[in-house]
Amino acid sequence: MLPNELPHEELLVRRGRRSGITIAVAVHSTALGPALGGCRIWRYPSWTDGVADALRLAEAMTAKAAIAGLAHGGGKTVAALPPGTVLDVDGRRALLLDIGDAVDALGGRYWTGPDVGTGPADMAVVGERTERVFCRPEADGGTGDSSPATADGVLAALEVLGRRLDADRGLAGLRVAMSGLGHVGTLVARRLAAAGARLVVSDIDPTRRAVAQECGADWADPEEVLVADVDVLVPAALGGQLTPELVDRLRCRAVAGPANNQLAADAVADLLHARGIVWAPDYLVSAGGVVGTTAREIDGLGPHEARARVRGIGETLDALLDEAAERGESPHRTAQRRITERLSAVPA
Ligand code: PHE
Image (cartoon, rainbow, N blue to C red):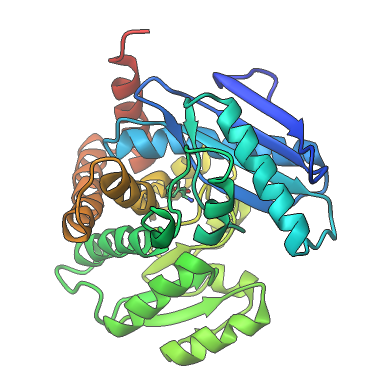
């Protein structure tokens, strides 16, 4: 469903002239700097659902950039494939060129990058039509896959939660349930396993069970994993999983993961808080990709310095959770206040 007011600065919707596919580029805010946000290629029941998703995801990118301290705003691209569409090599290339044209039409107010359904090789093709693209392969002048940086940020956040939940125990022995083993989820699972966490994982794609085996993790149904009896639930699939009904049934002590837009509605953050479950805001936990990529591709930092900046997500989270605890409110409320303050400090 589309909102009845458009809080976004700009929305471009067009049918790709080569691919025929509906492309939506939503620019939520450029108050802090050019908007950035990845390009999602995904199937939607109707193109309007794709537009609605682009709007929601763009807004989340504004929050992500603002809470992470970046001089950027939020945007997102969604290419909405009709149900059942399978792109062949030529069809995919046509779509990526159409996406590049759409991004370029925003005249620098928005920069794209990879997201669900796209990766560095795709960004190289997008880059044939626009300069405003992050994460091209190194051979094409970019810094490649942003998933390892996103995973670094998630790990930094989980270390903080491990310490806060269990007086300095950290990740070793932490009981973690993970929903989703995509690009980022797989990296997080491997790193958690290596750090000695006890894992139960799931994915809608049964072939991902191989990752569970490799990590020595238990495998569960996607529904089951959400209500596992663990310390931390890590949402790493698509958004909207945290519904009021689910919150009633959760058996974890904290929720922190890289999936964008985890809350089915803002009010769910208060329900989590009322149940004493710490929700680390997804827009902070998942910020490693944009923090690391902008550090390297805009600020020219080397991999080590960029990584240190990404790990700063842990400190930001720690301070946020302290402030939320002092105020007796959900971390989401504290974060929203900080974001509003940052955005409103900018002259219009
Ligand atoms: N998929 C990334 C996110 O949701 C988007 C991104 C990564 C954009 C890297 C630019 C560079 O945050």
